[in-house]
Length: 254
Image 1: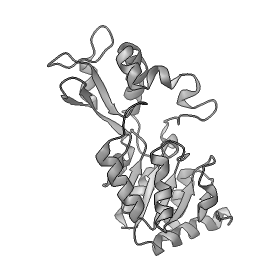
Image 2 (image 1 turned 120 degrees about the horizontal axis):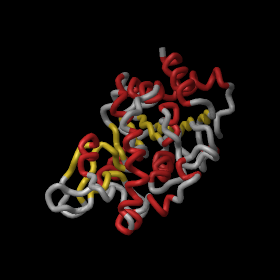
Image 3 (image 1 turned 135 degrees about the vertical axis):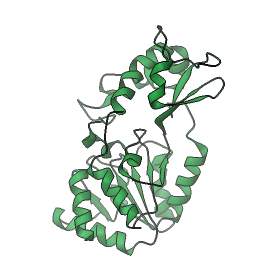
């Protein structure tokens, strides 16, 4: 079922699907942020987990077991992420929203780049680096305020109760934000078109969202370089560069 049209035709076909849609939603993963200089998680040679075991640094158990080791990994990464800027793919998605061609962006990314590009309705199902919170009293700090919370032991501590401070991102072993997932599921079920960009569609429960759209009679369009479990069910399957393809989409839309 996946589209087999040529690269020059795919942007026009995707533009047609968007024009025909009454309620489209975009689902994004790490691949949309790679052109901004942020590596994805599993690509051979470049992925974040290529040289680091995620179960040593990215689980809620690891955070509590060895908070210093946790921050040794995340502190420099968060400093780097704070300097990254949206790329043309993020900007294209924001433009689709401005043109009322999509309802919202559901993203697995924690990097805030959709907001930076101007997208207004962004559902961050894995949380965001924008804030960090005390795991004891719930006090919260903006990203730029967190650096001041670190002591000589390399652990960020609450200025009030001295509890451990954790970034407001979802770690392995944690539940996804209930409100965000509820909104994402509602959007997926109501969508007559879901455009998946830069996601392997393998990490659940987010990977189940395309199935909600398909089950409700909606269509699926996939733009990502690696294979996904939904390739055979997509009306159009694009394997190209996210920046080039989304820029071509805007041109096709006119």
